[in-house]
Amino acid sequence: MNPVARIGLLIAAIALVAAAPWVGIPLPPLFSEALNAPGSLNLLALCFVFGALALSYDIIFGFAGLLSFGHALYFATGVYVGAIALTSWHLGLPQAIAVTLVISIILPLVVGAVCLRVRDIQFAMVTLAFAQAGSILVMQNPFGLTGGEEGLALGANVLPSFLTGVENTRNLYWIALALLVAVCAIGWWSVNSSPGRVWQAIRENERRVEVIGLNPYLYKLGAFVLSSFLASAAGFVYLLIEGSASPDVTTASFTLVLLVMVVLGGVGTLWGAVLGGMVYEYLDFRLVVLSNATGVQSLPAFLRIPLSEPLFILGVLFIILVLFVPGGLAGALRRLNPAFLASSGSH
Amino acid sequence: MSTVILLLLTGLGLGGLYFLIASGLSLIWGLMRVLNFAHGALFTIAAYVAWSATAPLQNANPLWAWIAGLVIAVVAGGLAALLLEVFLIRPLYARPIGQILVTVGVALAAVALIEGIYGSDPKQMVLPTWMSASTVIFGEPVPNTRLLLIAVALLVLGVLLFFLRRTRYGLIVRAGVENRAMVSALGINVERAFTLVFTIGGMAAGLAGFLSGTYFGYIDPARGTSMLIFAFIVVVIGGLGSVTGSAVAAAVVAIVQQFLNFYAAPGIGDFSVVILLAATLLLRPRSGEPA
Image (spheres, helix red, strand yellow):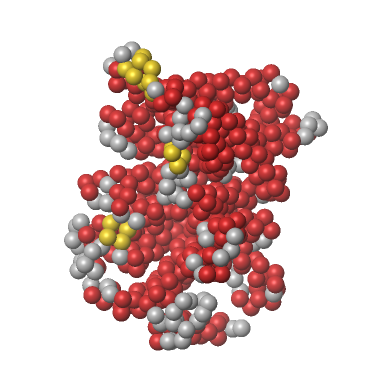
């Protein structure tokens, strides 16, 4: 396929997905309601956000080879700075976005500059430490800003009217789709740019990059800031969709879940990570619904209980993938159809 | 003054818990280079197995229920670790990142399963009379559980040091921490030592899981994960593969945490030790590697 046709196909696909709010057909058992019902659109919007978030994590973990255990901190930055700017500082939406964007660059710049002084497992531990510090801070509710364990609800009249109310779910759906498209475009462009190729070289052999005469530190910092920034953008859109900030997104478990998403999809492939993030979020949401189905509820306890816990099913699925399918879903699809690799033209 | 004594002993009791988790984690990391995220799950599994096995006995005879629970927790923790090592870690010896990922999967899945079976609400432990009481030390009543934790931690420290310094397998483990490749080159089966160290670590984590129920008075599914983070901090500050280092670091971390949480503000202590971890790694970048 030539590049022009491929771009045309991509635009057509995006337009098709963007048209979902006008499609009133029910899609059981994929969704419990029609495709354009607010519940389905809300779930899809969340899937898009997590696809974007997984991609942002794949840039740093899959492409630059940096195992960070603190990515939750940057998603949470988007969620909490946005929420605080809107509720406590009473900023309008454009100003709140501007403030969040600025902090989303400064914070990873500072934390990354410090963390990247060490590498490998030490890097993982330092990033974990900073993320944990952020989590403790949020839980302590300093100056009544974060709401502690309760979290922070945006409340009425904080957001413009086109973003609130059930009938406006379609606007949030389009915003989430726009986020995903933008993050994919930035991700694709960055890993194929010349710094992006240096990231992959660092992943393979950092010393060699140094010997060539490049400074790996600056490239790694660039990857760290870009991936954190994209995570914060996803966090802000997540805040708009949920209408509240919950401390769950600050925890170490949330970073582990991100790791699961990326590995599920396929480390080091952009579309694999997006797929992993979307599939994970979809399953996490739908498995709860399915577990309440009468078929599952009538099973004996030793089958019913594991099947009612989405995280158990996803955790086991993850272990099986790590053991037997090292390339994740992307790798599995590739092995099924080698021609698919050639035509999709990914990495 | 009496508050200081109380905080010190409470801190040492908590440090005992940290030590029980961190010692296994440190040996596993030192010998196998596996960052075991499932260590918190071993803690939780053992605590719940012991709790549900002894639940019928707890009200009738708390002391025997407690002793039985302790033994069951140690066996359950060791068994779970053994299975984890043999079936999930061993196939991935050639893929270090894969090993970490598998332990992450086990951590998430096991805690979710425990929540599914027992619910996320805490389960109360019925303690023998002596453990619910206090001993007056320098005019301040100190809960006996704190003293018990300190005693058990010291006992485990002694047993581990004896194992490492006086037995043949301990020698292999110590040599493996120093230089794994050389030990294999001498024709010694290091992989058997991996399994042994993993099992010992699991037994210590199981013991910690059960004793956390004694210390806090209840068990809950989330405790293992939050303890694991502090245990990581202890391992890094104490030095990789060093059991004595873990013991000292566990005491220091827990005491700093207790004092700052009490005198500064709740949460400041937790925050400070996390920052202490970052500072240690940044000032001593090789603190995660063998000395």
